Length: 403
Image (tube, rainbow, N blue to C red; front, side, top):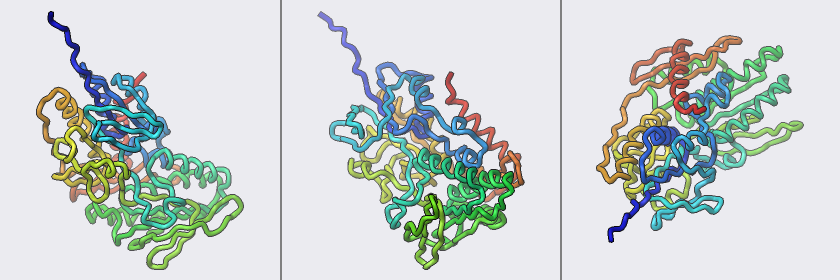
């Protein structure tokens, strides 16, 4: 008697709701794969779009405008959604272990959890500095700060930003822009706001060409942001209380000390320890080493994309543009491995258009400005470049709006 055997269901598990996985979920929703059970595990139900985050801090975008809601996206992809934090991988039994005790089986696994700033080597940074990731934590502190400034605009505000890459520069300009717009209508002098930007190297934004670095350093100086170049922060400690406001002392290896109310940490990225402990092949910083197919070098059933991945044949900066571009090839190779087909290599572009927001440069302007740079070509800040960037970002986010 012939048996009617049901095909085995394969489990595809996605860890993290980063840019690449958002695209993968949308594409699975548009092209469902029979016999595949899709699961998303993410620590938060919303994920910030990095392209619009500086604009949100500058006050140009609302929270909802710059966040992807993963619940309707997972529903569109017919994916099981677990809001939980992954703490370990059992690679012998192909299981994902979560903080709440959940163990999720997988046949194929993809990891897109971004990165976090490295703080452990600096005394006091983990306790007193505000890391820019997770973004939800950054925005919680930022919302508290702008609320406090709105209530007490006469008080001196001193902000420190550690890290002079593109992220730190954009953060400094965006924060200043928003706070200036709060202070001006109150007739409080904008001199009440002091922003310090610390950079270990002698140059800002070392991954960019000299023309970009020079122009942005000039605009930071013109806008009164104090640059501390060639200064390595080595210690952060609380120094005294001023009513309800805590003051921190930042100390550098040179002996320089600066007192601030808030310290934002935007330094070199790092990866969670559980990736190394699991036995995945990683580089010295803990990022997953992947082949051109976005497969792990050591575990072919595991894929990785975005900041958490390092392509062994194509070293690129940790930037959102690459995570977005990896979304489609990641989806295609996940489908191919589930169907037993050969995988396709992906080669990221060497040069890419970078649009760097500078906040507003006029007294009460609601219009942003942006630099444009691609390779050695740089265009100075202009509102039309901001509008172009705004159009690109809004078009990207529109893909994830579900009624």
